[in-house]
Length: 171
Image 1: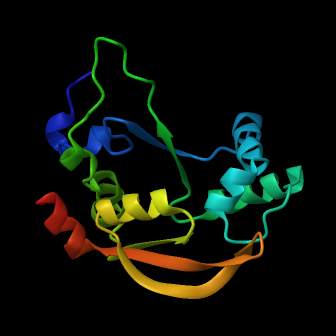
Image 2: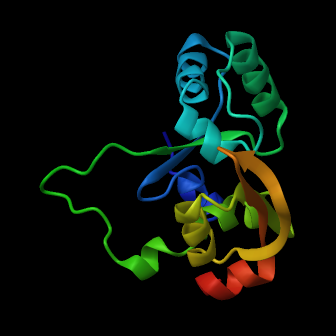
């Protein structure tokens, strides 16, 4: 097969992956339904991913989720690659790990988006730290919008603009 790499941008072969992550489509098959069903059956996963009522989810709900993800503009699973062997070291440079490069390549360079937004609940402190570390800015709060175990929590909206992503990554 001829080498066609001279005909496209250098980052194209690795568009759907980084050193540690693989971005792939959600498939409407038993494997993905089983995986998503396991997540949907885990109360911790539900609490961290969905600000709605924490309740057991049915197979019908999992089927609905797969259908919705297949229609989403960027309905992908972000998966960790296999663990590095003892000979290979995982990236430990915090500065490198903090760069929102994969988000930007997919959203800003290929998707032509101007901003990326996400949200979480205030008790998800680890996610909040990660979002801020990779450049997302807090854009708003829904005060006491999530009720769990007799306590109210804020819903928090985050966003990053293309110009902010470019400044962070030096692109």
